[in-house]
Amino acid sequence: MSDLEKISILCVDDESLLLEVFQDFFKREPGFSITTCTNATDAIDQLTTQSFDAILADYGLPDKDGINLLKEIRGGGFSGLFIIITGKHRAHVAIDALNSGADYYIQKGGGMVNDMASLVEFIRNGVGKIRADRALVERESMYRSIIENNSDLICRFLPGGEIRFINESFIEFVGRSKDECIGSSIFSFVPDEEGKKIVGQLQNLTPSKPGIFIKHAFLKSDGSSAEIEWNYRAIFNLAGAIVEYQTAGREGHGLVQIHEPLASQSEITAVSTVKTAVTGTEPEDEWDTFSNTIETLENPVFAIDKTGVIITWNKAMEHLTGVTAKEMVGKGNREYAIPFYGEPRPMLVDYIVISTHKRQSGKFPGIKRVGNTFTSEMEKVKIREKPMYLWGKGTAVYDDKGQLIAAIETLTVVEQQPETLKSDESEKEIYIGGLSSPTLKVAGGSASGAIAGLVPSPPRGYGIYATNKRLFVIQNPDFDLSKPKGMQYGPYVLDDLFGTRTTIDNRPKTIDAIEKLLVYEITKQDLVTIELMNPVLLPGFLTLYNKTGESFRMFIDHKTAFLQIEHLIKSFYPEILRME
Image (cartoon, rainbow, N blue to C red):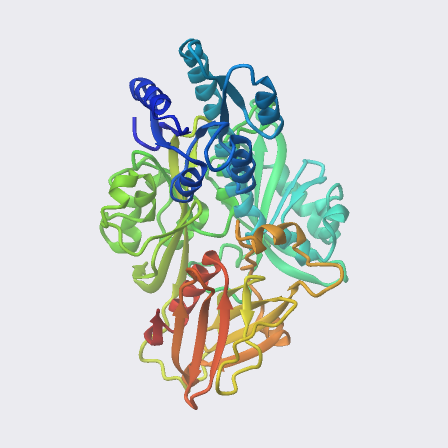
């Protein structure tokens, strides 16, 4: 059993004899590791550098009683088991501890040895449940993060058209609230004549051909419409009947084409042949739901199991690489790397599935971790003989027992600009990418010589965006904390401000929309140096220096936002980037 799989216990007691008893017992008990200390101060120090599944603490510690220690570490976010150790005839202590958030208590004395078997069983069962619940939450969070924060317009609806789920991109695009959309018909957003054709095509889907790409008009609340490329997929029960549809859509204009457009020949084209998981009448298995969602996304995504065998290769990966899922799924030996590097070699998913010991060996340079997400450095590759910048973002998938079963990697690619292209040539301006966040702030003032050192108050969220010609800084009204009614993304703000996670809006924006929110812009030809400082103890920052000696600085309060900005700058102008 690896150290990660073992149940880790911290035992806190000022009686050295009792600590020895616990140490000897748990060292003999399989699947446990134990750390000891003699006071509350040392226990808190241990918790700052190491995580524990369970804490056993004496009530009568010399510097702080066990209940105050319990309250302090629960307030600091400790969610494991807490077991109070009390003296005999002190039942009120046990009751007070349980009321304060303890999970169990054990009494000192000659009979304590007889209670150890019950204690071990309680810890095993309690930690197992906590790990399973945590894995479930992480998988749900990972699933939700993919669909909620994805730039695609994602919708799930019943065969009659009733909408059951939509993501934020869908809400923003149509200009209606979530409550207005849920329960309404998906076909109310489609012109009547086109709607009839779509219904006919969807009714013809089968388990062997469950998907279809359709390009059609989609209506907004203001009466306008836009041509959207949709990937419709049917979900079937065991009898082969359609129980639900899921669709993901994207506006075609402004995108960098890395494959032949699927919907360019007619209104209805290109039937997908990738098999959809068949489900029963019970709610969909989480992994099937997750796989179906990955399949419909425009982002190139693939996954491997813990042995390195490819288990998912979505349609966007097929379009990017020209290699079909049928050719890839089931293969091992790192064949997923061949379309990018021309040979089998390790990628980010390999780093995720290997042991912690091997990760620390230094054989995988340039990979960074924020929470449960791993990010690789940007690399120059060739995809279908086209020079590209590529970087990956990945996460692990666990089963209900907390065991790693797979690793998923999402790829971002940007086409390299020809090195021979002159800066004054009038090539078409192409959107590269960008992000907004309340963790991004700008210094007081603008690019007028010395950088001011104050951040505006109340805080306002900003964004940074790039095309192949210009870099923009905008103030994003969606992240304006000065508004009396709060922010559009209010539910996520408290978590963000306290640093537990970041709110990132990386949905594509049109150049016109960016220019309307402009705080600062600079052309590539006017830039001399771009400086990036990593946020560690203090906020990080991005500083832009132009030819006249002026500079502009953006502060970055969160590691996740920093990593995305680093990738953006490397795809925009890596030659002048200086990392601190």
